[in-house]
Length: 318
Ligand code: FAD
Image 1 (tube, rainbow, N blue to C red):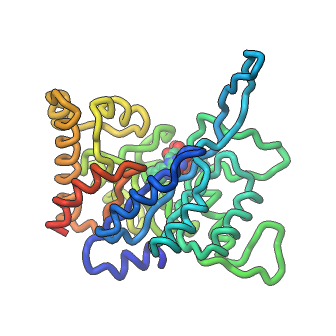
Image 2 (cartoon, protein in one colour):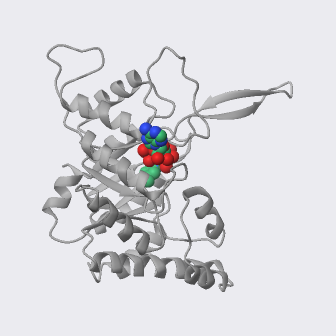
Image 3 (tube, protein in one colour):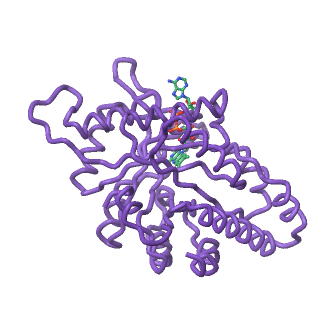
């Protein structure tokens, strides 16, 4: 089922999660066990992140180093199939612009269509490293271009103008940034961009993680005023380590509220930090649900334990 159908049919707030494929050569059983552990909470859909290739330096037998380009966490599509057919949950693969030609993207979309995957989250990907692509190959520069490509396929318009091509029917999700994307000039630019993505065919948005609900509400208000009508699902992450106080703002351009910072700084053990993180996310989630949010998305990556502790409390109010 499509994400927007899940949202439309839900009789109670939905809780979805996002996971990351194991590192190359990693243990898939651990991830399966993680998914099994969250089944009692009935996630309607699970997002699976995607990662473009990165350059690594590999030591050679003669002691020299050779630059090698690899995808460290491949397997997004395989996991989609497993989640759909092993766990009967709708997978949402993330598809990137960075590092892929439009032709590769079309082939990937055809694979996903054949697999019965109905949802996609379309993002640009981070720009820190991009696999070099020859100039003559066509690429999607921004997520908006990717949305247009998928929306075209949904109309039966493939690259190369195929005759009698079967339209796909993907539900399209996109990213949204309540605290402004790092490269954007301001929040209004991001809101305008979300409107353009909606107009191009996006069906819903999921936000970047945030710790202050005011940022989410302000963003949604601005977006609604600009004519954005698609659901904007809040994305939350549980702060689990003291180093998150500086790593999360640096990576995701989110602000840690002073109260949370003080509470975490006062902790003397890892266990206390985790308790504070779970408590903060719990209060954020309850407030979002009380304000009428029909759904919350949790960035759990591979470790479900903090999420499970959170859900023990949250399920009392859902
Ligand atoms: P875009 O919408 O393309 O925007 C990127 C930047 O370009 C923005 O600053 C925007 O303002 C600017 N811009 C857009 N269009 C124009 C234009 N026409 N002219 C000038 N500037 C423009 N990353 C991964 O690598 N893998 C993942 O699986 C992944 N999943 C994510 C899931 C969610 C819910 C979110 C919020 C982010 C995720 N990311 C992921 C991170 C994402 O790839 C980065 O945040 C990326 O830098 C931006 O992606 P985007 O789709 O928002 O890009």
